[in-house]
Length: 269
Image 1 (tube, rainbow, N blue to C red):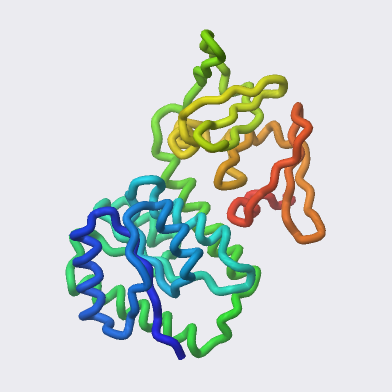
Image 2 (image 1 turned 180 degrees about the vertical axis):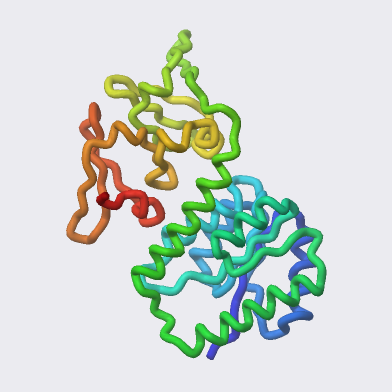
């Protein structure tokens, strides 16, 4: 039995250090594999190191802890049990949403030793059970966890201002007023975001993570970390021999891949 390993993602260095010290006292056997300070590094490091436990701050530069956790879950090796997830946050409403999404636990900042001890106890019980059972995860278990993370993303994005109606895209010396209802899909491309209608393509500099909360979540569905489609532009969904889903859109010739996290959206009625 190897010692449990954890990854801490916290953008405030003093808080990250305090959390690490508090964990060392509460659970000396727990090894801190790494500490990172932003959401993009959190996902990258988690996939690289594959720790047993993730302690993610919810609000971080780059992307939120929730989005980072979703990215990790989406790219995690098939049939390998996902790590336990603990959200660290200063905002009660995020903590409650995280707990309802069945993260292992949440911790409010500033971290209090008695509350952290409760989290450690939960994690220790989880770790003991994991060591006593088969580590390989079933497809159903992974799909359930992916669906919970997706629902958490959707619920937190729902409390946003009125959705965007027009996107202003520069083309040479002109600014085109692109109606959001005409967009078929959006795709991240290097430093730009591709905005595609049935007959045109525009490039804008607004990152997808910044634009997505301004779109109506009922109309625009994220299908991949870098791809969002208008739901009523989807013509059909196909599954290939490997079980991966692909979308065929109305008015566009290309097929778009659906990542595992967002495959839970597509179920026959």
